[in-house]
Amino acid sequence: MLATTFATSLARADVEPRIGVGLVGLAAPLPDGRLDSIDLESRTIAKGARLPTGGRTYGMVGFHMDFAFALDRRLLLPLLGVGGYIAAGDTRAIASSVDGSAARVMPWRSSRFDVLLPGIGIHGVKRRFAGSAVVRTGVALAFFEGHVAGGADVVPFETNRGSPLLQVELEGCRRLDPTQRVCLFVAPRLYDFGWLSGVSAGLRWELGS
View 1 (spheres, rainbow, N blue to C red):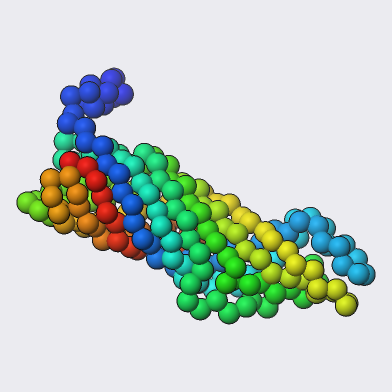
View 2 (view 1 turned 45 degrees about the horizontal axis):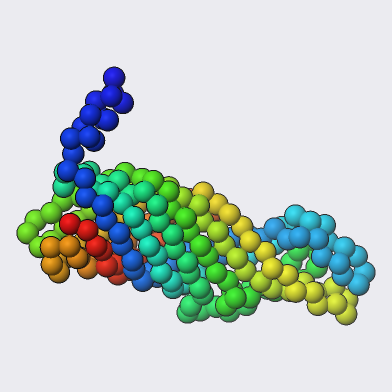
């Protein structure tokens, strides 16, 4: 019954497609790594060995693109978004260890990618100004490099991790013309390799009536 009512309302709604492209700054911890097997001079580190990174927060910059539908100037349905980031700011090396061997992580070679999945939110418009609040799910992928030392050996490694992503997006916009807006947004990350573990913010250009 509820699904039928929602479908009927959706069919009657004034549906407006929107696309947004923006520049983003991201602050988030580098997640712990899980390494493939590494052959040192004296022994082999087994696949899946944990590499602690210390949980220090790093800055990153990048871009994102998002596609959504606005319904009747009230309901906002984001559908799909993608974002890519590279390291910026303080990227000092991290001294660590893996399975008893000294390791070093190089954050300046780290990168991240987000795939944002469908979400739901509300939005409102008053003259030339608009605002919205949206809850989004998605997947976060982190990539980074370093090396492991054992005896006379120094062996480089590359690793990556994936995590579910849950965030709240808050946005304020000013209309430039009937189809274009410039927007400022902030998105606290409720879950991203851990609870309450990051925030992104940036400037976005949106196209849509």
